[in-house]
Length: 437
Ligand code: ZN
Image (tube, rainbow, N blue to C red; front, side, top):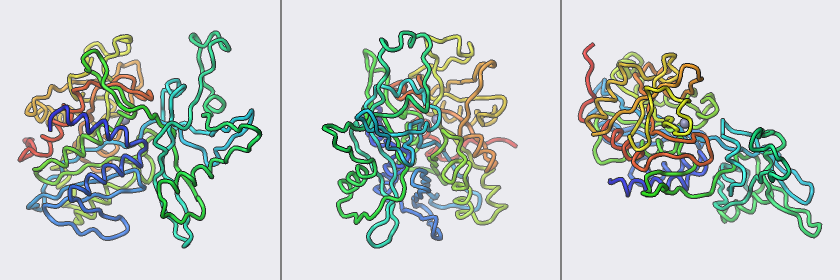
């Protein structure tokens, strides 16, 4: 696949995957169409050589894998990991707030968004709704208005003259999105009635009795776009980390792969990964126990295996050069960035980086390298968690980006495709590079 076609499909995914649930569903559909079979965690798994499978936990975490054509006892697993969630505003369980003619919705802050970027945006609402139907069956349905329905207006500068110097956001009082206005003394509809209408629109055959719960988020509705005079940049919402999910899926779906190949796209990375669906949960561990039931040979296999943990990296910001270590200045459009941290907030070591660099060189991709400045706190991601749980050699890497955790993030137009080239090569190299022990 060429870069232009790749970016076109990436844009479609970024736009459709409005929430982690929609991301997992979109990718699952693609695997299903490619002949992968769905496995349920509530049943035993019977897998066969040469076939592809996928499983979804808690609607927002997706595991997909292909078994080698002729697996032997210690056939390695070539793994990539990414995350489906992005910082957002999540609706509270009882969100309705009415007054001054408006209906507004109470939200909690999910993860660490740059909150100022959420003001004056055309926001949609999407996520997961749990209902009980007329036959007493509890059902889960994904909901998405697929259009702007809320916004959080800024306060005019005339009402706060110091806003450009000392702008602070009160998370409890300043973030209620506008949802509706009651005109002519009409009582405006409570939110649950609107959700019911939307579900009936999306699922006309659903015999909905009652809504029992929901996990709904506000999200940016603006489609991704190229920008820069030559279209050299990509501006989009949720680049962190949907690009990595998409890249991993496309690489796993290529015609020919070797060994066992696996992709895990986890929810809840932005809030620390400790949940049933997060990387601290046991989804991958229990999946490997099902696939490799013998514990000692499972660990031997994992010691021959390798994980590329994919999550976006900070590119050099030209307006804030002082925020970067002067010897480590990743650039947009120069390809994936290896992330290091002496305190193992990233799982990369000199040993694991060697394997990735070998793959990157062979794929014709230059490996960029990043460390945080010593006087600044370093982020983390799923790499160290999975490396710790499985005892698997791991590299943390990702596309260079600007404005991470803004509602609109920036990357280079070449970067997603350069990441794809390395991951596709990782899965399709006849043998993993070998270490002399
Ligand atoms: Zn991320």
